[in-house]
Amino acid sequence: MFSSRIQKIQPSATLAINAKAIELIKQGKNILKFGTGEPDFDTPQNIKDAAKQAIDEGFSKYTDATGISELKTAVVEKLKRDNAISSSAENILITNGGKQALFNLFMALLNPGDEVLIPSPYWVSYSDMVAVCEGVSRFIDTRSNHFKLTAKMVEEAITPKSKILILNSPSNPTGMTIEKEELEKIAELALRHNLYLISDEVYEYFLYDGKTHFSIASLPELRDRVFTVNAVSKTYAMTGWRIGYVAGPAAVIKKMGSLQSHSTSNPCSIAQKAALEALTGPQDSIQLMATEFLKRRDYVFEAMNQLPGFQLTKPEGAFYAFPDISGCFSGQIQDSFQFTEFLLEKAQVAVVPGGAFGEAGKNCIRFSYASSMADIEEGIKRIKEVL
Ligand SMILES: Cc1ncc(COP(=O)(O)O)c(C=O)c1O
Image 1 (cartoon, rainbow, N blue to C red):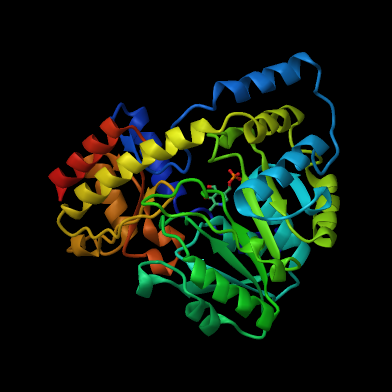
Image 2 (cartoon, rainbow, N blue to C red):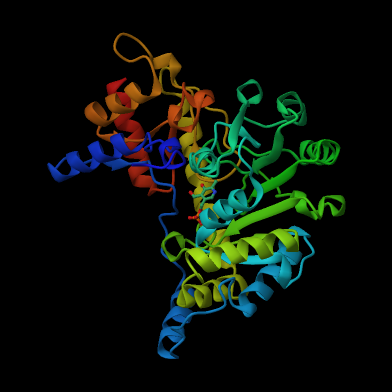
């Protein structure tokens, strides 16, 4: 009955634990959830107002399948202002969240058997999207360098079949970044080995300790081979609005636009107007969120490293802590999935097992600090009590 393509997708390994958490909440248990991948802030008022205005003005019809031109212009401006990337409207596709940008890319670039290099631990959707598009994921284990990708690791992983390398800095799930010098060396590798680069920059503004973001697409020699994927989802606390975008070589962007026109058509017209306000209106909400995340990151870093069996390298960005918890393994608990279940049952704390993000994450858990400081304090206290 099923296509061979769809049979390659695995049910999300986190679903079981999520379902269990929901079940326990239904039973009246006070579960603290640290599994979420979205800011706990509300969308800023000016963005909501822009959406209301769009509705009132009747902006409720189909738009160009590839996005409204004002929003593409705003993206071009944003990329110039914040990322030193030069582009024009023909290089931009507006999508239904960053996810659709990635999916369209794999559909447009992969032939059966083409390899996609994915630094691991990795955001789960990459490998499933690659599988649906009949590509082959080849994982690059980053454990030896505190989950920080280096050019050497990439070079060792390249095979004649490698076509795409995914870069995700700061990273979900590890919160680590890729250093600029490494990105420059990776650029050389991309040229030498004819690789396309997908740079997923959805967490670019959530960086700590004076770190700055570097977009690899700003290197002019890579103009023809980098796709920069981003979204308003995390930056403006707009995960539910579903607006993302991708910037890259015009010929591929055009093909992706055709695909989109036959699948979802345009991203929601009203959400596009909201995204336009997000990119062109006041930007102070980003700093407010980043400042709050920094406070929580500092607290989590100190508190987790005092937990017996926990070892956490200081996260450099995003809003995730990815501690190694193998020091807690004993008896019945021998992997991150069992540890996660143990935390849920005994501490009533929900986190994501690191093994869900690939073999390289198997000794870790992902703890999202996009939760209130009070919940974080209580959550870590509960974990301490049950260890
Ligand atoms: C690394 C990474 N890329 C892309 C996305 C997709 O974001 P969106 O909600 O805009 O589709 C996410 C969302 O969790 C993510 O963590």
